[in-house]
Length: 334
Image (cartoon, rainbow, N blue to C red; front, side, top):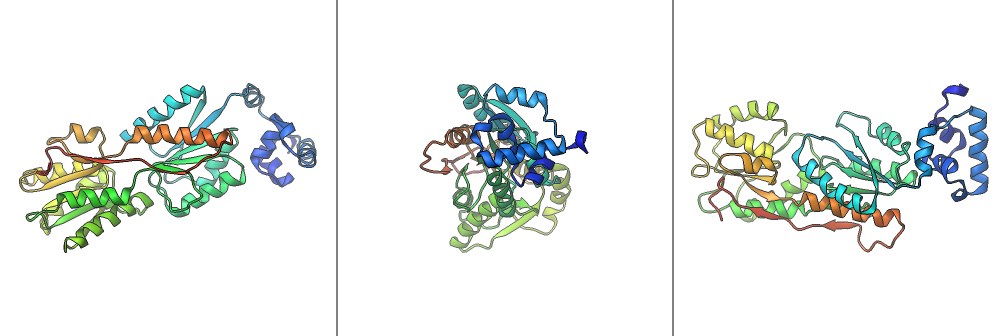
């Protein structure tokens, strides 16, 4: 076992976190003598040989921030990374980019990321559930790793997060669309339930109930290969005056299908989306959408993480940035 021992084996045998093992190897003066001696004893017993390259990088005293994303192909992710990298450049941080897809084991992936000796982590994923947020929080806290959620909704008051008020945004776009001739308003949401979409749905339902209208939530996928077949049969048995997609990609996919079925947008049908991505500008007609300031979310998240990594006083760990509706040709409202 001597040559195959890992940092996980050391942490487990010594009864400490991965971060503690890392500090013993790279910053031993920051670890209590008793703990340091126990870890070193285990390292010797197991014959653990730390990665020389990783230790060399750590000794340079640079600050390394891990950035976790779920899907690199999404337009909003690329723009958010722009905000993060601009602030990182200002502070001369090094960035390590990690991907965790929806089918991966979060616990395993996060422990692997912590083993990379990052000084802090930004987690970009608006598709996390509250249970997943709790799991992420526990792992990072157990390893004394500062972290901030970017564009992640959570009701946990102890979790640092930067996003917009999704419930208010859902309410405002729905209320803006409702008029005398717009009663059958559908929300095009996702089959998988997660926090940000739940809040959008709550805002939509509130606006519909306030107007005395019946909420209609149609669940599909953000993947156009999946939602297009769903929309092919959508108009067979439904009367619809307007539709709001929880993502621009869903809204544009729906709008294309509606046009193919002889609907005129916006004369016969209002269509709106969320995020105000490149899809909103490229669609024809151009899509009305909620503008989420994703660049600013990325930049603000990095600023907040910087304060936490430097052990500075943080007045507010929940930052809500402003949003607005960008009106375009897919709706008649101005």
